Image (cartoon, rainbow, N blue to C red; front, side):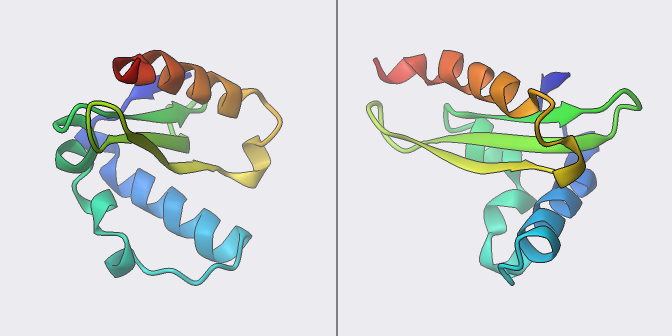
Length: 107
């Protein structure tokens, strides 16, 4: 299930992003290098973009995708992550569908 981000999921979202980046992908990036994930409401939602999370059947965060609005004509897709165990289960496509509908502000 794909839902709009809510603060109650903050720690799970941070855990997801850091795990996928550093354990699954081996990127080696810290939370300090991406402060936007510490305040998703201000960095994505309040500025006219949005942020969605994918939840499994137990309502645990297993994926994320953000749309950060820069101008009326430009938005950036950010923080598109899904735990490896959930890849191939159509979560990414469902999340992208939500983003595409919201990104319509730029047309």
